[in-house]
Amino acid sequence: MLQIFPALILFALAAAPAANQAAAAAKPPNVLILLTDDQGFGDFSGHGNPVLKTPNLDRLRGESVRFTDFHSAPMCTPTRGQLMTGVDAVRNGATSVTGGRSFLRPGIPTMPEIFGAAGYRTGLFGKWHLGDNFPHRPMDKGFQEAVYHLGWGFTSAPEFANTLIDGRYFHNGAEKRFAGHCTDLWFDQATAWMRERDRRGEPFFCYLPTNAPHAPHTELDEFVKPYEGRGPAGFFGMIAHIDRNLGRLDRFLAETGLRENTILIFMTDNGGTAGVKHFNAGLRANKTTYYEGGHRVPCWVRWPAGSLGAPRDVDEPAQMQDVLPTLLELCGVRAPAGAAFDGASLAGLLRGRGANLPDRMIVVQYSRATLEKWECALIWNQWRLVNGKELYDVRADRAQANDLAAGRPEIVEKMRAHYERWWQGLSGKVRDFVPCATLSRRGPPVALSSSDWQDVYVDNARTVRAAAGGPRGAPWNIEVQAEGDYEVELRRWPREADLALGAGSGPESRAFPIAAAKVSAGGAEYAAQASPDAKAVVLRLKLPAGKVRLQAWFQDASGQDLCGAFYAYIRPR
Image (cartoon, rainbow, N blue to C red; front, side, top):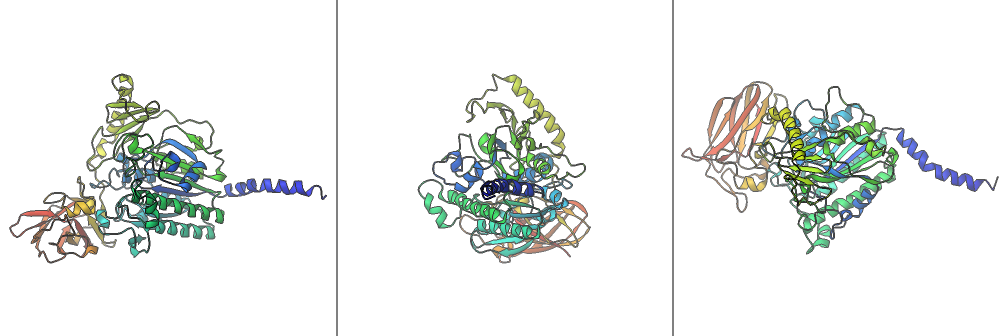
């Protein structure tokens, strides 16, 4: 018997990992999506960046199935809407970061709603950017726990003076303060929430979208100093800070035993920004463009208990809309009746079964403010049709330096025909604005900012200070649930700034001799006198039920229009 023990011990040790994997696989897998903001394909040391060091991200990359031809939108809101719904941005409504186009159409099921209905606990920690008012807040869209900031982030119009260090955040709609850097806040809150889910034995869907490394590049000195004089130090420092937190997160998953049965997906929301001129991994252009540097992003999937096979590259084109149907198949979660996805499940590719996707063309389209036909990119195997007229073979020409449209007219025509059919099916939605907020007699108050003005871009502290948007600003599209009397408080500056109507807000800001305010809403006009020393003007409105266009602006003593009311706070009377 003594001679047998060593063999038995070796057998037991060898069998233990397999047994652990089998036990983990018997439970519903957890889902953890980590999405960083404005980090381009070249902003990783594992992708060849000669300055930036990202050891934890590189380790995750080495442990994952890597989609190397994966595509987001070229800007953050449309990417996030496509991720949450599996539906193209033009179809789901969230096509822009501003211009009244940042909201999902009602009735489209979201990832947290679907996973919540399947018994998962759902949590968001970080950047939402699909609406700040009811019914668009993360709590309204299926997240049972929501720790987040407003707008696109710090110094956006809704977060005018908020700071990445010792700033404010929102917890399930309630405003709170945090100490330290916001990157640590998101990771700490997510980790604590996952720990509690593990303690209770609850499967979870955790969405961890950081606002870093998006500007402003405010970072702790310990992360910035290693990059001073070597590139965009603040930007690189923010990525290094994320990298450290990923290391902490991975240790937590390993120590709690969650690592084996957690599907961890890492992606970025669009192409490169501050780091592009230093290193762009051979891609052309950057965020907001339809070249590869605008929308090709990393997508890494790790699931140790999921039988995904060895870490490897998958070079088949894929897109953000594929993530939701993929997760539903991997987790055994049924889609709601009638749900229709523009994406396809990548589960077969992940499991290495050799099951290629059907031949398909992918349309990448979003809007800065307005939405125009042919402002897009089409992806078909190695082909890229940019703005309907430039054709590139990215397998032979990664940098998209050689336009082949004149020599391959048959490819151009086939891709243009696909887009024509796609656009025809959606063009009726182009001017169908989703209301940015719903006014309810019993619902939460509504806080509007210029970021949601229709068809204009006034979405950050700089454009607010400059009084962009013209002498009347632009309308907000809102929904009124019940006809009645409402009170609107108009401001030049947000409440938290505590500034007078006629004041400036730092250098390069425009101050106005505000003497009156006007509102147009529901076919009626309202006016009130004001003083530039006052902080707000309050008017009472009679609003009809249904969709209402509400526009508010300030005037001087002679009745001359000065600027839009950049902030409006509305509540029932």
